[in-house]
Image 1 (cartoon, helix red, strand yellow):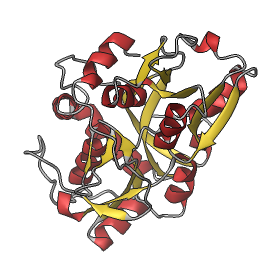
Image 2 (cartoon, rainbow, N blue to C red):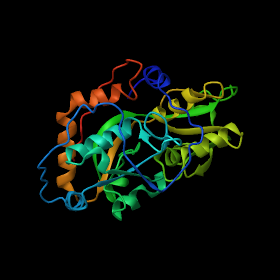
Image 3 (cartoon, rainbow, N blue to C red):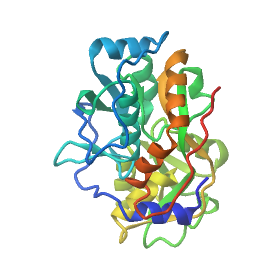
Image 4 (cartoon, rainbow, N blue to C red):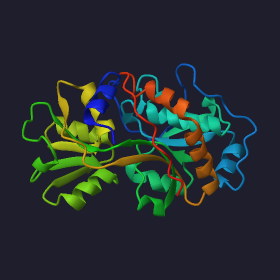
Length: 294
């Protein structure tokens, strides 16, 4: 788990503005900026992968992502272009499958609908702050993890009553519907009131309007919001969970999972360049996590 100081410095430098950020189920094309540190693979074959067979037949890939998380998965309302570390990981996977950037279709899927989107084939894979859990592994598979963070708290800048999760009794905490953080609060902090919205950006709006007292999710996400509005918001306390981000895949597609895990295992230099160009713009270095070949 990264320390709060390291992640704070990492994210604060490069946070993107959140103004106008909304939720949309419409697909959007991919348009990466700069030169990618990898090439689009050719003559790719993944025997026994129905997902890859579909991608190859369609000549494109549909990737489920988030659009309201600065530095991770963010859609610019002015250009409709996606950016962030999760987006770059998604592009890297596509290239390793032989799909160029102009054949990637990003589709914004909220947290509560991720498993359904994967299971129903609405997306070919999902990359969007998707914590690997045993419960989720019952309905889908995960490649990775490709990043590790932890749950934390976002509060109003002028609120001194909350400095850690221990100060939440009787207060109202907001998180995304169907997310790991909201379930963790319910399971382990029964004296805390909870409120859910479809997106984290809606929770942030509720926090600023004093409808809720705090927003909880992974620290990597919250620091992006705090850096975007430093006069209004702050992240408090240490992380109190460990969250491993994985790439969501259709259940039983072992061939594709092993292929992507191999890409991650052998692509350390590429991972570092993608991280440094997004979350790591402050110059702080973190290690790529080891994949879990379950």
